[in-house]
Image 1: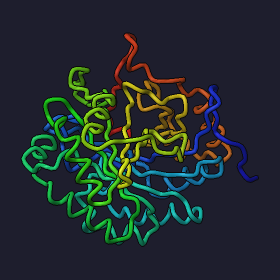
Image 2: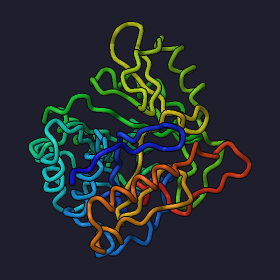
Image 3: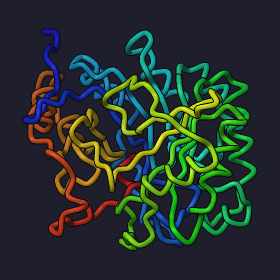
Image 4: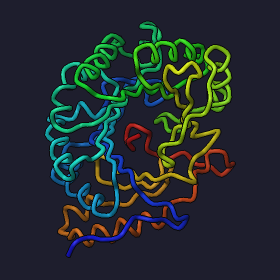
Length: 332
């Protein structure tokens, strides 16, 4: 029997976007994400196989999901990633299939990923200064990110989005330089507020650079105006440069929550569904996938999980409790 229906929660929000974490491992150690020594990584046998990931994605697509984004950790460190991209792309013609990456492996992988069916790339880059990159990422690999961005452009990816997390005392003075550089290169920049999702639980509101400050700094040097909303479920508030030379976005998860139109769920690398980045509860789908559950049963379990999706996060509530898992284990 074909699967039917949509994934809807008690707030009337419909899930259209599936984030799949393919690994919790990463080849950087960014200060806002994990400690310098790294983390105890998941054993290989606990990771979902490509076949299991593809099967779960197929069920989601049958229930109305229209976009899939591959995340990590760092997704490109998963062996044979282009093979998974091909398996997912073959599920549906024209599938919006994207990746969020630190870009270190894009110089070598961009062509293969494009040929396999990947449609878009988001690359994380928090600074234009090599020394500061080393300070933030704890690895001296700035030029590899730049080379990866250039390779993605040569491979034909459009648009290429660049994600920059700002932290006071590290890189808040680079708002305008990053914006000038990105629009000069033809990339779409997204500034992201630092969220309390680091493994070491070192997040502090004092180091948060809020959207209001980002936009004020930008507006002084590069006048902006709101851009037309293309995707109501997108996390970024978009702005056009008034001189017509591109757009910039701000993802203000902390100071301007967009929970009311969130259309995302996340599948962790070890097969847990999270209905919110900040959720304290996970739903185990690895057990179902490996325990003989039918597609109909998986669909039913997923619909029940989505129905219980949280109305919104509690980051600005005194009762907020940071999830035990950090961002690199959840998937962005």
